[in-house]
Image 1 (cartoon, protein in one colour):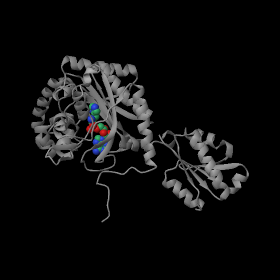
Image 2 (spheres, rainbow, N blue to C red):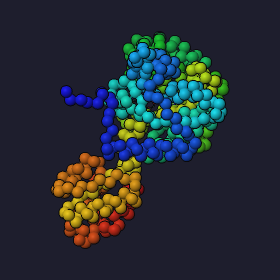
Image 3 (cartoon, rainbow, N blue to C red):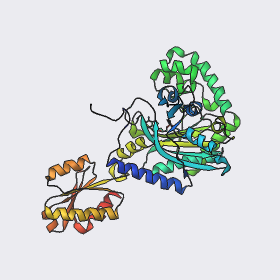
Image 4 (tube, rainbow, N blue to C red):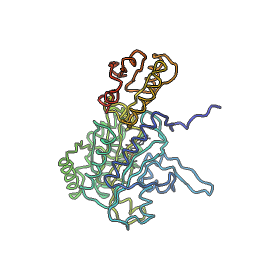
Amino acid sequence: MKYKAVKGMEDILPPDTKIWQQLEEKARSELEFYGFLEIRTPLLEDTSIFVRSIGEDTDIVTKEMYTFKDRKERSLTLRPEGTASIVRAYIEHSLDKISSRLQFYYIGPMFRSERPQRGRSRQFHQIGVEVFGSNSPYADAEVIKSASNLLKALGLSDFIIKINSLGCKKDKDKFAEKLKGYLTGKKNRLCEDCKERIKKNVLRVLDCKAESCMQVVREAPDILSSLCIPCKDGFEKLKDILDKLGIKYEETKNLVRGLDYYTGTVFEITHSSLGAQDAIGAGGRYDNLVKDLGGSDTAAMGYALGMERVIIALKNQPPESRAVNTVYIATLGDRAKIEGVQIAEKIKKELSSLIVLKDLGEASLKSQMRSADKNKATLVVILGEDELREGKVIIKNMQTKEQVSVEKNLVVNAIKDRLC
Ligand code: HAM
């Protein structure tokens, strides 16, 4: 029998592990700079924590959780997301007694049994943030800004921030009834899933991607016009703050999110290079969750970025704005091999963010170039006997195929000019 990784759960191999390490390091330093503290919770929790937080009729709870009984017949679940566990820890350790405002971050694997496809796996990783203790629109704006800053620090550009408000619990319930009334009259035009959603999770009909449902939704009542005055004012204030902070966003009236704990501001961040699974991160306010799980009345808000999707988006960027670049050193002849070791060390010492690979074997230049290509090298430094005699090396750009000859002593500067 040939063993394989469990379907939808991927190995992360070098040189990709380098990208993961760099992303994690950058996220830690960015978030710690802004005063977030790291929190680590177990991968397994009591199943009921997720059922109560995420909602018993949501897709995650009904179809996607890895739930099993342990030897003592207790129902446990591999965490499908981080928020519920962190709220559990916040209550269990009375963290509200430490400070009225606390902000945490976490990095780690999550598990959802979804149909695997590009950007969607069954074990995936999130970098998440949870902020406890403020319900002000300034806190909303700060959290959204933090997500935007973090993505920029990770090297990503051209993402879109979409925002909406679900209103308070009362607004949300009132709107759900109104929507139910509207959709029931149009039931036969909805997909089979949405017919079920009307009964159990009506807001999710709004973000169904089936063409027939999207047509019905176009005419549906608007959640923003159902908000009470304080919620409406809060959302207007948030937009005003984002404008003043220079954070671009798109107001998206059908953005509802798939987890029941949200009330008030919700947001999603998308990247066009991703295709169907284009959400690289998402979050929102969950002001009732701490109380619902048995804690004090504590407002809270957070988000999580999907690391696999961020990495796909980073790899889709042009080489000059990639987060991690690989330089491959190809050598021809004995002298070139010695020089290759020295040049590799020099590059590594001065440009530590680069991955430097070298080939000290006897392979032909053609086969070394193939290997550079396989390793997704951005630049290849070619060391040949003739060039070295003249004190020169060749640098080849693997995308444009352009080749230049540079002084051996200036190779680090030449790479820096092209990649850093
Ligand atoms: P979520 O929207 O379920 O929210 O997930 C956040 C991000 O995780 C998504 O935008 C996506 O990038 C990534 N993601 C989700 N499922 C998968 C998957 N199967 N494969 C790959 N990536 C995936 C939450 O999890 C909330 N806990 C976010 C939050 C924190 N809200 C408040 N605080």
